[in-house]
Length: 302
Image (cartoon, rainbow, N blue to C red; front, side, top):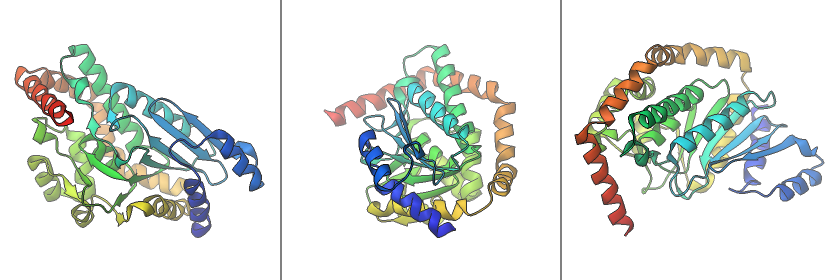
């Protein structure tokens, strides 16, 4: 059963490029003798989603140029897309990946945290919280196909999934490196990492703002598999087949037992966490640090 599900999922992934045209999708469905409504496409400016109802597997491709930064708009569209899949009875699992070469997600959008009002900072942070609550607590099987670098908030997205497969390329890094920007990762970032890689690895990563290479990430358990980049989606399809071989209700309850406490902790302190973020990010010293960072980025681009 697992092998068959994996094979079907891989056929879906292999046939869908970053912007797979609907007409080609329909033609492929006809050739396979499959009803057209088995393949569902929906997209917005930030996310492309393709669901194959015959396998129960959806592909979410982040396509927010240039680096899939987690802007307020991106976070809103991401949550809407994931909620649609949660409410679709045909969907059992999601593979999250990037349509942009060499980058999974660059993390939180610095422009959302610099030179804005306190009201904007609060709205932005609530959107970050919502993204984590929906992804970390999803009833679906969630597999991150990390096909590029994934620092900070991008790492959080990968950590929030059930399983992580990373492309083996020395250029690609992953980690919670917020302290390098003078920013402190909140307690629920910490809890997510702690529950994945353990206390010591989390402490070193957070304090030093470490960005891990693929082999380092595999060694500490930050990712579960390291494969050649051209095989990332194939490996994700295979893993999905293994996860979907487990009865949904048993897996979902087990997942809830493992993840309920950190989610309840944020839900109980959500407004306090928001206000702490607003106070912190509004400090003159933090604003100056972020402005300097953005200036360095502009210089590099120049």
